[in-house]
Length: 226
Image (spheres, rainbow, N blue to C red):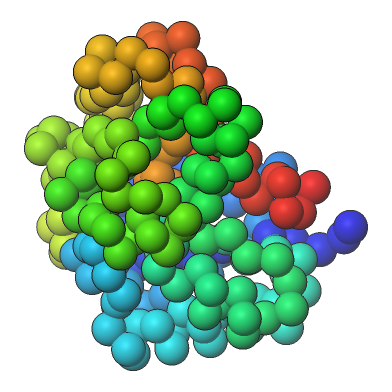
């Protein structure tokens, strides 16, 4: 298979470090990044569909990437699970907008044991977002980083308030801490799934700290566009 991965990006100001879904070199094959104007974190990180204009913008961006030669379409934000079916129906190439789409597969692969979801915002990841990814609200084991100052000020703030540089050490420490806490609350957790496309840079540290396999959007897209 030739061609590139088309990545639908939120409209943000913070730097994208290697491993982040918004960094072209994070992917296993060439990637082309397409910012969807106006799709900031406050507009997308919520339980439910974005405004109709943003939905059209995401669909249009996916179609443009396909026309330019994309062999698959991904995104930088797991909350876009709510647009998975609509975007996939609009193009002819495979689409995976959210790591949450991996959840049913991982749960079956681990014999029905809990799969922990590490998310940018636990209060925002509600029944509609989970249902869009085939996840039952009652079975979800979730840990969020919304109340960590370094994470929230960088990734959840409006674009105009986001710092240009990220505090990688602080964010890694927070991600590891929340993952450990999730596993402590739910010791039967078999694996961890990173909803947020900003978290894959810390997957190794999370895996080492928890002793669990850690999966992200980068792994999911490798399945649909090897």
